Length: 202
Image (tube, rainbow, N blue to C red):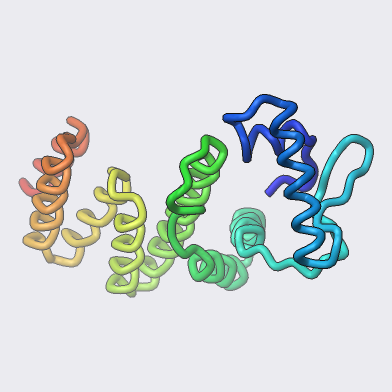
């Protein structure tokens, strides 16, 4: 996603298991193959840095996702903000480069999930304020599906169930999550356990 990178950064990202000389050779072979396959220079070199050729007509949904997230964070107009959130939510289609676990991919994956959760939470808050709690519930559930370990989302979801008078569903959600954790030899935090007990006592 970065606009410019050095050759060594590219080699480290894609071929970390190779020494520098081997990685550089693979880099140049790959670069030539891309040029042959697309009949165009995919990468251009300038002042020691490589970048994707700006003349190529490339669409990158990740860039649009990030752009919409930035727009929503930077403006005050409620309708424009909501439109940016909605577009970002539409663009998120699951874990970034699922099946690949290089460090840089994992880092980006976590950033995008966090951005997606931010979008869903903000939209849920707006719909709740408008009295559209079913929509808010749906959005929070999407967030939980994307990030099952996110306890803040779990609290928001149970709070909303309770607010709507659906106490039994809040309890069912919590118990289902506890079962999910047990299957993975995990435990909830003491904070959310206390939150749940307090919520059920109301």
